[in-house]
Image 1 (spheres, one colour):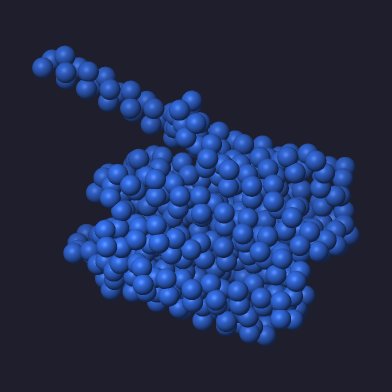
Image 2 (cartoon, one colour):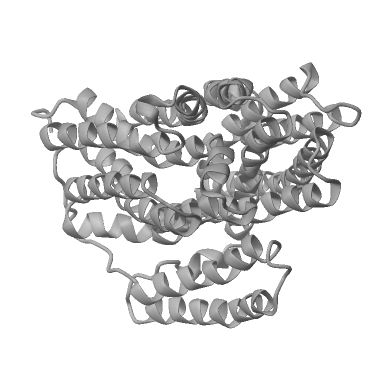
Length: 480
């Protein structure tokens, strides 16, 4: 591995990994321009985000297995090339349906390239170097909200080459080409000796399940909750049962299920997965925030991007505070992070009780929300995965990562739907937009409150288990 340049490898891989979250954030501030330019409904606006997150959730584990099967570098480059082509498709969209299709294609390709990054890092770097490398990698990913929100606002404001919202997708073309060239020259190929088989039935059933839940949640409100929306909800129940049955049968036959149900025999892991879901739901607040500022208050995309800076800075700085907090409060660092994020959302909602425009208290809350999310994000996966057996950590990580994406999609569908529901009932004045955002922020804080309760239980349970093991070890030592 020494023949490769580790710093260059990390630079290329980090740039590639950045594309998937970056494209989620960069679209947020462009949604009002997309809605006006294509004449789409609010439901389609939500679907532009939720379809992307849902597809990532369903396909991320399969993308990792394809890398193990055909080569990680090869799949990384194939995913990046596909991502570039899908971005071009998005930029030429003439209607909401075509744009949603392009977003699904983007997510499919992102699901192919993203899993190869961490797998390649584990191959290229020695175990002693991996904590340092992962810290730098995490910091780069933490920059995605800043780069995405500011970059998206700037592109909409500047209209490069006379382009409007299309520029946020076309910017992926030169970036993607540069990353592919870099990967070709500096990233080593790696194929593990043993790879997991692809669970096509599980992938299909999970995709159908998400479709049956997300589509009616997103489109049902605008359509007046027609019969098909309730039929879709009802159909999701037997599909869920069939998915669970299929995954169990695959495991019993010695296959590699998309979701190994044996993981959920540990109640603490199940609680951790529920926490991951609830933790990512409030991400929809950024969707509501961009629309509130631009459509409600008449701010430009660039001004709205500047307003998000406190959150983005907090999110980027949060991971830097994690280790000092771990030394003081141990695993309750996750509790601190979730509580800080929740308090931030409460402050944002409270500041709009008698106001229409965001003020100092609002921005303090926004900073706290980003800071708390940054602190908790780096600790969530570590603490939840502690409940998995060593031989199942990889499967557990894939399950938790997919759950985070499902939480993001569900949050856009539900909290985004709540924002537009309140807006429809209150009119479309500046005060109505402020009221809709206030209610959405309060609901997001409610999600985090439930997450906080689960976190307190999980951390205390793990602490009690650790003390019990210490007593057992002490007794065994004394007897010997």
